[in-house]
Image 1 (cartoon, rainbow, N blue to C red):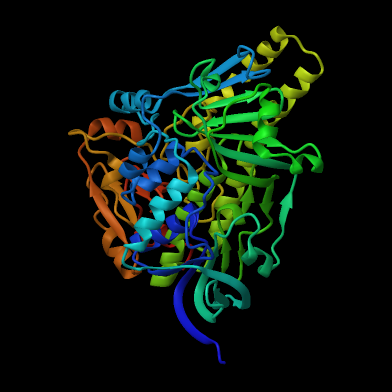
Image 2 (cartoon, one colour):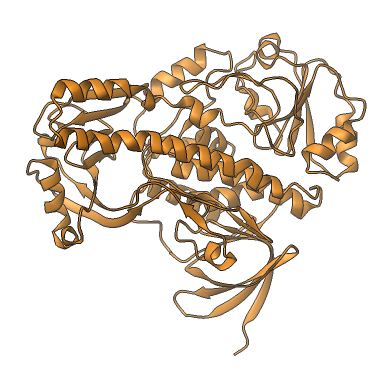
Length: 530
């Protein structure tokens, strides 16, 4: 029987949060896609549990934030970690950061660019996957095919790919010819394997078990509420709903532990017996740090866990992947619509891989505390020593700069400026419109968010009316550029320049105090060359 073949512009493999975000962002940019996943239902396991403020800013553009907050953890709960030697003992330390409600109040009152547009949100990853799949299923332009598995990459050239896929129910195979293919199929990516790109591991590797369970045992709240409780016995408890749903994750020290009942092994690590009302799911996973050597091979691109893997410490995995999705989507859309320069798609690797490498090291930073704490306790360190050690590292819970102030300063598609960039700070956003930076979020006179006024393509934010020539120059290139004229002295004071050209992903591409002699020269640079 001859295998049929279909043609699409973009084939996205993997309908998890990264793949669905990529598909929805492509449609927002005016390009349809085929989105496939081998699984017909979202994962039964929660996986991630934290969307950082930058991810929420990006998801706001897809009109899913209200649903995410409705189904997520209530805004009143603070973001806190408890550290203890066992569940039976009083905690040694508490790391705490502001609740969503507290961040919202700051956004409403501090309008100097140091706040995000959206606070973070705690939400199980499988719920996010469900929300985004539901949106993809009803979005015109997203051809969602669940129960369809990637099998092989038949060909891969700069002009396009041919992929072999299979219906997981019937076994029927089909070829799909696509101008571009994006691998969003996870850490064990079959697409990445087919390209031959290596994901280079560094640092510790271990086997872990998650027990996802329901329990109303008051022993779990003996020391008050918490998001995470890290125990020196080698287990971390995660409150999934601030009520009765939990995850306990812990390393397997030897293979014999894999034969022990997971709930019983969890109680051993907790140091006390708790009543488990229902085990919702059990998962085994391999902890590792890895970043792909390349993010592109021919017409294949890697995003999310297919491009990088982290331990769950620090909340870097899915959030880095969502940033990948938005960066890549507008560039693929530009290529499909014909206005991309020859270097635009290569800039995806140049911009996003350094972010993954930096986040890998930040993940290591917190992982070291996670690993040293039980070792110190096992070596007999006193409560006072342990508490002092943990107090010294409490800064890590407030990592606003890591999540919101990544910069594409060396990108080939930004208009580089001489001089030193502004300082980077761990705990805060340094507002700047220097090319490569995420531009500052401000509320305009009247209460509108400036980010909500941007177009889907590039936007020239113009505080003087000097940018009239940009739209005509963009039209000659088929390039979407909106001209946003503003009379808002407060916003101008934060932004610091009269003219700022903002990319589709809210990063600055060019800025000036006057119009350039030739807008075409600027536009050609930021779209990747002629």
